Image (tube, rainbow, N blue to C red; front, side, top):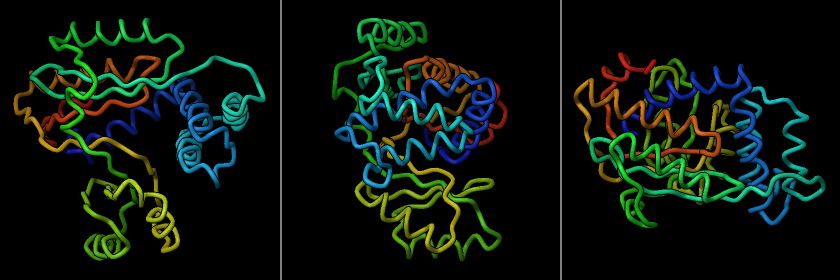
Length: 252
């Protein structure tokens, strides 16, 4: 979602609340298990960058160490468990926004039917593979704590390899080539920048502007329903909701 820095702040607050209730730990565990399996069973975060990112995310939300280790063990096969598989859904939501949903499921038929239902109830529809993904590009995203001298900080981040920078209320979002995410993250940390989160995301190429409060509320509710589904890991859209509307709707 564009206006991404504001939306990211709202999303982090929601994740923190979900973590307090324990609702997000299952999703984090799935991400860790899949990171190990997709990395060829490598359970060492120093040798498996996707796993490293998943563990850092889990730690940032205070997921217990034993939960993290169980998820790693399931991925490496040292402990039994559910056989999660990754699946991606594409479609169009309310107001014609393009949406990509990344999920982890042990039952593709069930999850597919439930995701389809969420789309249709919102007035949207699922589409086939590739139907909307051409409207997005994969990028690396680093969320960095903002320092006092913001202009100087941004120039430093650019010198260290940032492709694009977006300033938020209390943080700066840095976009990179996906292949350089690990290297640039290391550079930032070596220069004492606090990296709150690093992830690979799908960034929209052409945004759809949502300028009316009622339409923005409908879009946000739809995205929230997707994100709250137990099997959904990430949701990307090309909705562009202005900050002033997000301020009034962040509890939708």
